[in-house]
Amino acid sequence: MWGVKVVKKVHILGSGGREHAIGWAFKRCGFDVHYYPGNAGTLRDGTNHPFEGPNTISGICDEGIIIPGAEKYLVDGIGNLCRNVFGPVREVARLEGSKVYAKRFMKKYSIPTGRFEVAETPEELVHKLRDFAAPYVIKADGLASGKGVIIERDFSKAVEKGSMLIEGKLLRGVKGPVVIDEFLAGEELTAIAIVNGEDFSILPFVRDYKRLGDNDMGPNTGGMGAWGPVMIQEETMMRIEELFRRTLWAVKKEGGNYRGFLYLGLMIVEGSPYVLEYNVRLGDPETEVIVALNPEGFVESVLKAVNGEKITSMKPQLFAVDVVIASKGYPEAPMKGQKVAVPEEGFYFFAGVEKRNGEMVVSGGRVVHAMGTGYTKEEAKEKAYLWADAVEFDGKYYRSDIAK
Image (cartoon, rainbow, N blue to C red; front, side, top):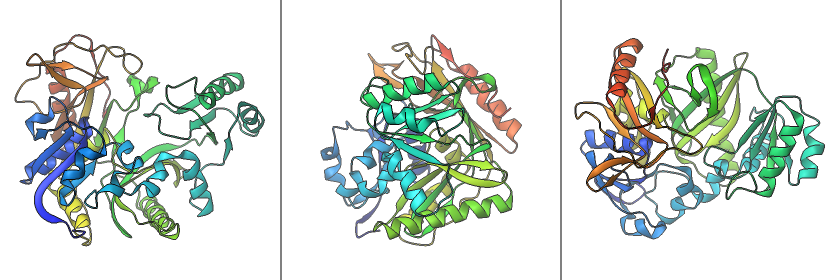
C-alpha cells in the first residue's frame, strides 16, 4: 500500500452526506473511521476531528487511508502532502480545478466533447459567443461549488451574466476566464470509476436529480436525490470504458499518474458519449446510492486499488434510493438553526447538521439523505420516502418524484 502502515483505519475529509456514506461503508467492514471535520450525524459512524488546513492531517500521513470527499482538498494539493491519500496530486486534479485546462486536455487527446472557446474578457465573450447557437452555455474556469454554469437562451442575458462571471461580480470568490461550451442535447449520465494507475473499474451507474423541484423544474442544486443501479446498453458501456482508458492514457502522457476516483460527466447523444466535465472525486448524492447498493463490495474495490491489485468489479446487491431533504430557501439562502428530529431506526446519511446545546440543528442547505434499499426499485423508493416523511424540522423540503 504505497509503503504505508497497513492498519484498518480510514480518514475522511469533508462534512457532507457523501463523506458520511463513505465512512458508513468502511465501518461496516470493521474499520476505525475518522472524519475531518464531519457533522453531527457522522458521529454515529466515527470520530469527528477539526480540520484546519493541510497541517491537520500531517500527523496521519502513512497511517491507514485518507479519502478526500470534496474536490477542494485535492485541487489544493492534499495528494502531494501525504502518499496515503486516495486521490490524485494537485497537477492531475486540474482536470476538475480548471475547466479551461480540462477542455484543452480533451481536445489535445481527441476525447469526445462539445465544441468550445475560451473568453478572458467581456469583449472577447461577446465576439466568441456569436459563433454558438442558443441555448448558450458558459462555465467558470475554477471551482465554484457547483454554481459556475450559466445556461441562457437569450444572447443579451448570456453576455451579461458571463461578463459578471469574468469580472468576479456574479459569484463570490469566482472570477477569471470562462469556457463557452456547445450545448449538447441528449441523455445526461454520470460514470465513476475507481482507478489505480492504468487499472480501473466502473462503479454502478446512478441517476441523479439536479433541479430543486418536481419534474426537473426550478434552479440547479447540488443534487436532490438519486437512485440506482441504472442499466445501460452494452455498446454504450464499451464506449464509456474507452473514454476512461483514453483519459488515463492521456494523464500518463502529460507526466501524471491517476489514483483515486475519476468521475466523467457525460451526455449520451444518439448512443455516443461525450465528456461534459471531469471530477476527481466521488459525486454527491451518487455516492450515497453507490455505497448502499453493496457497501462491502465498494470497500473491497477501494482496498484493491490502494494495494495495487487488480480492482474488483463492484456488483450491486440491491436497488437504492436517496431522497435529499433540504431546508427552505435552498439553494440560494437556506434557513438554518432549526432543531432536527429523525427516528433512530431510520436509514439516513447526514449533511447540513451540527450539534448546538446538545441538539442536532440545521447548518446547511441539504440537511439529511433519507435512504431506502430493496430488491426492486419500487421497494427501495417506498422505504426512502417512509424515512423522508419521518424527518422533522421547520422548513423541510424534498422532491416527490425521485426514482419515479
